[in-house]
Length: 297
Ligand SMILES: [Zn+2]
Image (cartoon, rainbow, N blue to C red; front, side, top):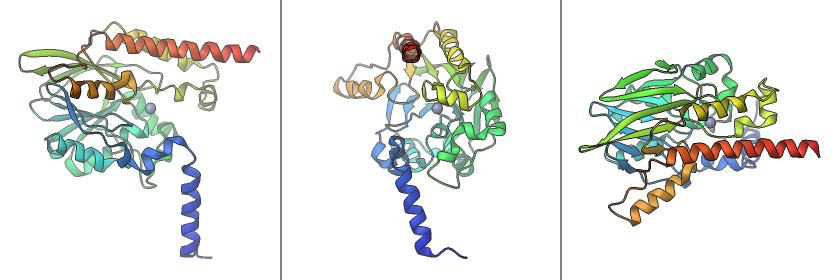
């Protein structure tokens, strides 16, 4: 029997109420509450993400490059941020994705359809899209029509690729997903050059025991892989740490500091990279230790 309009609405309402029980739902339900004014971090590197998930724009001098296409449901915010900081979204030629989770890849297809951007992602996460799409969590999208997309380019460990006038060295740093990309490249402000570093996925949500068992890693090997990845890039020289979510190394506090102290730039800090990577290592080791203690009780 055909569903009535009223039944359809009631199903919608029940699903909404169920979804809203999760603390992670608010950025999907009310993205505007997470608005962040875009800003210049240093020279040709800009922040165009929101208060929940990062996006960075690089003016390469020959086309715009975007890191991450933000959460599903936040296309309007991304477009607004790009305009608000003084660029035209039509000039974005490339989007490099830090990893293949829905909150980082959400607007990729839209950006491609609208502006013809070429989409890049680490090769292991491109494989995940094809073979284990459920690990992208796209099914948690706020838009039931959201789907995964076909990358234009897959990035491998050790690749060095040039986008416009910006050359980026890539390291695959698995753990959070198999294809987490870490990126290193120069940014310039007049005659001054600094090296930016981006570790593309820190969250422990995919290192929880139940999660790892479900995805077929009962020995929890992904935790060791994550720690190895941190060690693999720990000694890179990085002047400017790029966060993957704003809570990484208190990114928005640095922004507020910058507003309050004109002439100073807290984003230029060659200790931030090592400090934050070490913190994640210590936090994970602590989580593992506490889990071990709880089990032997
Ligand atoms: Zn993620």
